[in-house]
Length: 83
Image 1 (spheres, helix red, strand yellow):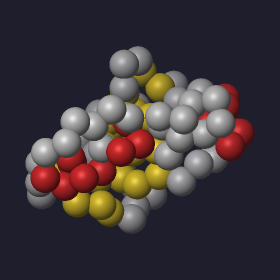
Image 2 (cartoon, helix red, strand yellow; image 1 turned 90 degrees about the vertical axis):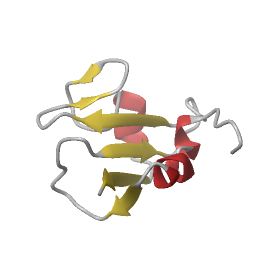
Image 3 (spheres, helix red, strand yellow; image 1 turned 120 degrees about the vertical axis):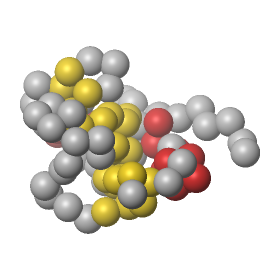
């Protein structure tokens, strides 16, 4: 398998690990979100839901978009769940 360098490209790696994309507005603990890149953040972002917060390398206090640039741009995303 090819090395994945950008967070926005982790969907295939998650699928190989047993995750599937789900369409939901009600995340469950263990769900992983993969967010497309934006102008100032071309590699995108990913985080895991702990039941209360989305967490990446920090606790995301304002939802799954990790910062104001993302909240303003509102890029596409996919949520993955392990079966």
